[in-house]
Length: 600
Image 1 (cartoon, rainbow, N blue to C red):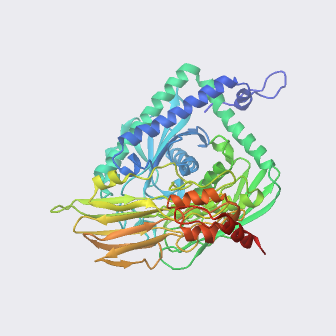
Image 2 (image 1 turned 45 degrees about the horizontal axis):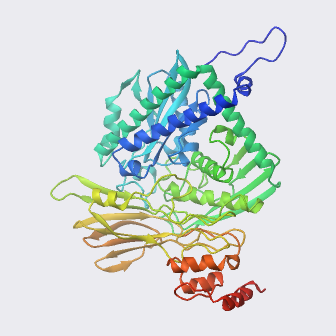
Image 3 (image 1 turned 180 degrees about the vertical axis):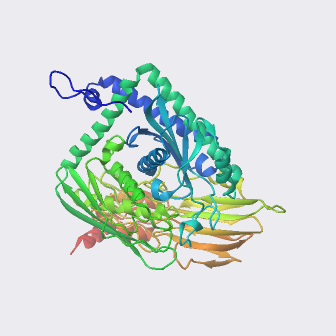
């Protein structure tokens, strides 16, 4: 750490990094910011190319960043990884800093690895590796990598265990431990993490990919510092953070003061078939925000709990959607206070299960959007589809003890907004990940997609409609296997805003011996026994609409009918547009129906 500045003899206030940051040349600031972002993006790209697991290589369920030396706050994050990791990884770095200090000191050449979700956020599948970066014997910053490993033990392959009642049924828990000491990799730790996976080769390959990505980041950062100098880059770090905080305060100040409330529900926790409230009271006061989640449900038996660090990180993601122009770093959270009491669904501690954290943070983000929409409907979108619909199918290769594990997540419709329609068949608001291609999944495992297409009439109607959900049907080609599904939004649809309608709800079914079944827990099921030809079917939700549907341009409704996205009946019922099956609009009948829809 840099020694404190000495007070000048003329009595002026000592100069600080923040003061220097104010004097960074704007062009230099922009160039170095771009170079830093490129370093993080290149680390992302290196891992995506090297990873063994399709969840990382194809779906891009990973992220890299650069973090402040003293605090662990986010400085720069890659643009291709998952946004939820932007906030979470700051907590992961802070945990590594604390553990390194407890162990004696922060040393060059050490690496820290862990998947503990209660200190580093998210769930056990996400392995974090944190590396201190030294220059001239001084800790300059931290580099970190996080990636979703294909399997980390636990009660079910793939680890999204819908029936878990503690974290030990979800996978093995690794607290922050040294993976390398003085630049030498510890083989004993590598052996531990690979031995606790059903797919040790995949875990080893992903681990090596993360390590090489961090090595690449360190080399690229060294090149940048050699070119511009440590002090200049240090000042850029401080200035970027200062500007984010300043910009956030300015944008908050533009909103009307008040308390804005929103709430929504999870279908159930997979164990007890009761809805779980996720609630927010948002206070806007001048240039500050208070997020009060006190009215949310208490911790539950099943795996939809999240830790407080994950809740804060998810709120951060929602803020970045609302305030899109603010640079992504720790300055975003400076004007913000969180109130999340202990013992809540959103503040779980060990050993509460947290494997299905994605479903809860998607609901949390939706209520943040809804609360901001109460303050100003122009700045926030309607609810998105709100579930990743994780599916795992696993079995053993014929004549071998070696298992195979199919695991993937799926997309749906995003919410409409004041500027246009929601995205059709997108990924969740927590993610820049891509939905793995069917060809990759089929080539890797004995499954076949018999259907993969858009889901008609699933979009929430509105002046701007939501995006459409999708239909996926997966057939088993092997003789036998076991599967599970972990989804949500089967009972509480994605909500529209500003008078827009709700999107369609999630529908999960599966066949056994030609007979169709629906899960008792609506969108969650574990231990589904499948034979050759049996199928799992997902019909994902669409996004909520924006504004009254009767105000949508009739020609746009007709175009959706011609594309097969809106039925003739749906056009009339939801939009008041009378069309034939070819999409031709009956203008007099449409005008009459729409007048009736608007009548009190």
